[in-house]
Image 1: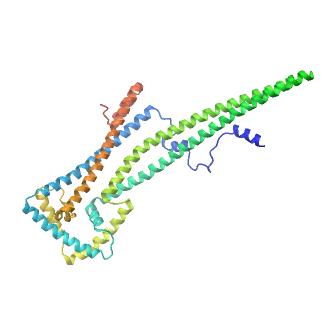
Image 2: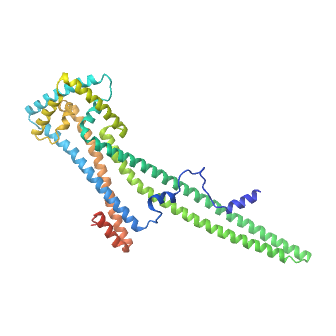
Image 3: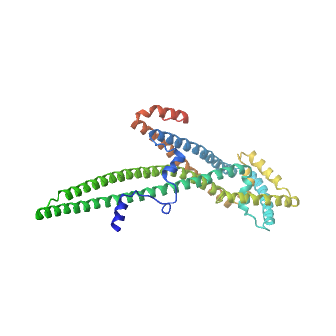
Length: 392
């Protein structure tokens, strides 16, 4: 029975059961995204155009953010270069604001909802929170989608590698089986021939039957071997396809993750849910602050006075300093603000450089595709016009 099972196993098609792999195949996976169309050079042109446009838009957004951070540095320099009497007036107002904020903080710390730093952060971006929430949600959703796609593709690559090893093993056993079967058949034919000579009986029929069986078995093995070779090539193609898609997805993953980490660092949070929680607590605290300020004075008047004074002396974004009054009083706090801005600016520079490299790489790849496939010139021209890309 073992010999029969072994022979049966050689000629049985390799299958991957659900117990071994619990994810959809690459054909199903690609059908959802690509309509099971083969990707050629023309598809690469579209992908490269998408890459260039995505990188360009990313750089535009990053440069706006970079200019904003640089503007903060300019404001700091403007403040530090103000005449001593103006600096003193700013410091006096800032001290009053810091005093009221400290009083308010002590009042609010009776239940310790969120830290002073988180309170000031939410206060500083309150008008932009709807946009911030939307952006964080989009980025987090995209992060989950990309990770899921990468998991699918990695799993598919492993599946195809498993299939290839299985096919190679079956081919090896086919070769061994053919060698053993052929040797046994030859020995049997020789034995029959010798017996026929010694007994002077005709062994032609048994010999012909054995030869017929050998030919039939050999033909079956050759066909099976060729089918396995075809399966192996198809498996390699699927693996290469999965690897190619994985490389493309990784570019989007790096960009998305870098932007998400930058925003997490900027707002000192770990997730959108944390930001939403901070805002919920902030609203409760603001309501308590309003009640408290009815008896302790109006912080708004001092904030407006400081904003007006800073704006008069050329500070472009004076509102943020009402939320960072301590930095106007304590030079060590101002150093911390500068350091935080420097870290943000460095990260922005790195992201801009990465996207510029992607943009230039995309342009270079399109030029090389044109050299290798001159017939694509008209299609490339159309795509570049659609995407408003200048190849020069």
